[in-house]
Image 1 (cartoon, helix red, strand yellow):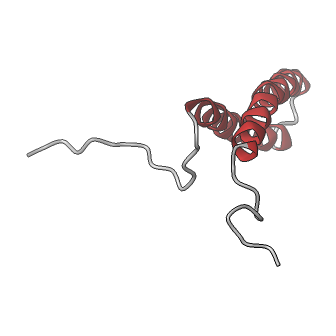
Image 2: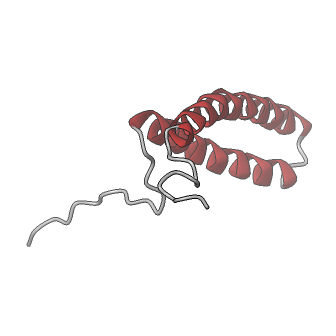
Image 3: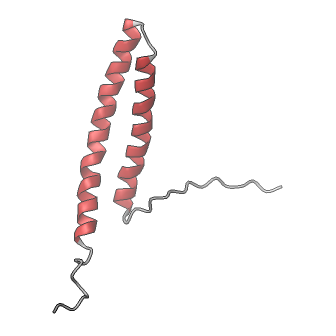
Length: 91
């Protein structure tokens, strides 16, 4: 019996490896952020809440760290696209 290889597939096909990297990091960090929010909402222990709030703060910074270069790379890629008017004859 062959072991099926589990490959990650995405509906989004980034145009560059840099964009792919930052989008993957954002995807992971968003999942972590949502989990932390759920933990925060279900915790009444003040010490545990302090730890979770610290983790949320770090998560926000991690998101910010990957959003900026992802946007920059996305802009770079879209700037390379032809304008809507290119290739069309004008009257």
